[in-house]
Image 1 (cartoon, rainbow, N blue to C red):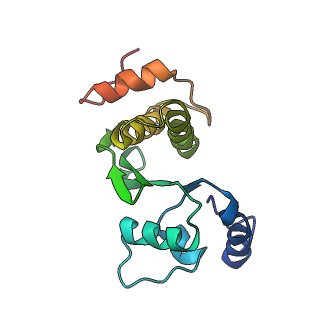
Image 2 (image 1 turned 90 degrees about the horizontal axis):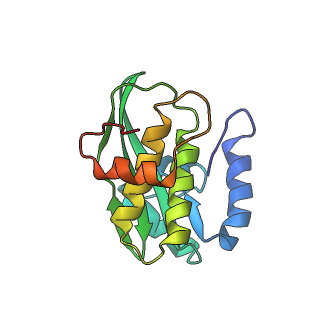
Length: 168
C-alpha cells in the first residue's frame, strides 16, 4: 500500500485495494494503512493485532512488512523494519541514520530488500531478511536521488557492522 493524497481519496484507494488484496502474496502495510484504507477497527492497534486481522480477511497473504521511523530532525532518523510471516512478527535491529542525504527512495529500497531476500532465500530466518531490507533502506538514505546504488554484498556487509558505519 502506498497511498498518495494527490492521487485519490482514502475511500477510493481502499476500495481499489480491497479488490486486489485477494490476489496478492506479499503486502506492504502499516497500522495507518489498515485503519484508514482497509477500515480495520481494533481495541488495540499493534502490528501483531493489525496483521493478524488482515490475514483473517485475506488468508492468501504470506508476508506483511513495514517500517517504523523515529524522526529526531530532518537529517537524523532511526529506522526499524517489521515482517509478519507464519503468525510471527519479527523486527529488525534499530538502525540510526545520523546524516540523511535524501529520504526519497528509502521505501523502495526497503521493498526491494524484502523481495530480494524473500525470493532468493525463502527458508532463511526472518531476522536476516528484515535486517537486510532495513539496511538497504538505511543505505539509500546516504545518497542523493531516488535510486539505491548499493550492491547485495554492500548491504550484507553493512548489516554485519554494528556501528552503522558504511564501508566502501
